[in-house]
Image (cartoon, rainbow, N blue to C red; front, top):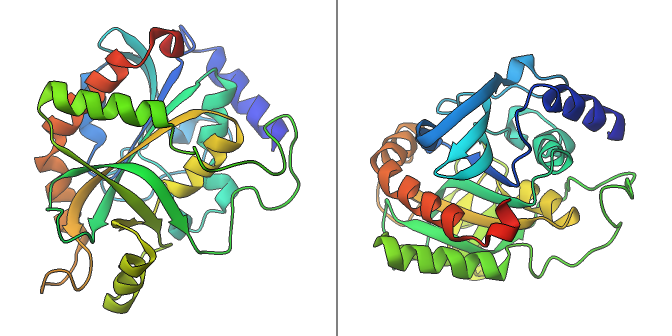
Length: 276
């Protein structure tokens, strides 16, 4: 893994005009934020050594280096999922690369199914914790000590200071947000009604198929991490209607303006020592 990380990082460093301190992963339907970035340059995943290829509708498959406002950022327009057949190590490989390129602050976004009856479709949820009951883990196997310790605390995997910055950004922009717990299911099938009831009893407010492996890898490398879920649909059994991926895409497109507004404010107001 270390050899692949070095090879990929060296390839990108040779082509990058600067090394951003902020990384952003754009989830399904949220890739429009990339249009707000002054790009210089961008890379197709197919051109980056050792990078997987995104196969999901709504994911463009580009790594973008540029400016979001006045802040230098590195953004993934499309991510990789366990359900695509990739290993957990492959899913989190781009996060390893971000760290190798100097990224210290990571913003993870996703499309999620809301379960909390107080939440509504189209709202944004700041993730304050997660639940992962599946056995696989991106850190399973040999531990490269150069990346992080074998055992580490996950209590602050979602940085409390970043959460407060996100709440303040919500207030200052007028973009209403919720706060809650995200639960990982592997997908690609949507959850059953019974699984959603179980997740709700477990304390989850939203369910999805991404983000958690990335947050684990980021925590392993002591990155400041914030997670934001766009509640693109209500999970199975919450509303009496079938689930489909088209609704996820449509809702993501509908809320892209407020999502972009919120992220811009978070990046702008996060302490400059963390972004420069």
